[in-house]
Image (cartoon, rainbow, N blue to C red):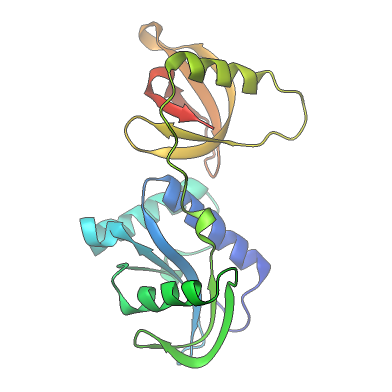
Length: 209
């Protein structure tokens, strides 16, 4: 990223990616932009358990997979640094959040996060990458909710949070309920950040809120 102040478009692009990365099943503890004092460059840091659980290579593969789903993400993989939640940089950012709740932009003027001298930091609120654990719904309840959503008027449609039985989740708007192969009911969603419709079997859905 170019030198200078982080602008709204870059913050929005980073937010879209962070939301996509979390929705793809990657547990994120912290997500933030940091401008390094030495280079004067902005990098998007992700502190995720995927780094510790599966290793750095797998974590970066997950980054590329999420970027691919966004189509034109507005952010490059070279701008993203994946770190362990145990990394001193992540710990210092979490400490900033604890000391300054509700504040997300910081001018550090060369102070260190971990061992990295940083001039500025922008921290994404946890609401962008943490989701409440929805209680499982019955198939009948899920069917009723999907039919309700399908019958909404032409006003602005708010996406729903869809949790699957395999532990994955995504946000999207249902637009069709139909009979698929082997007489299984399937739901078609316009999923956030995905160009093609997502098709999910009704019995694979744990909840939709």
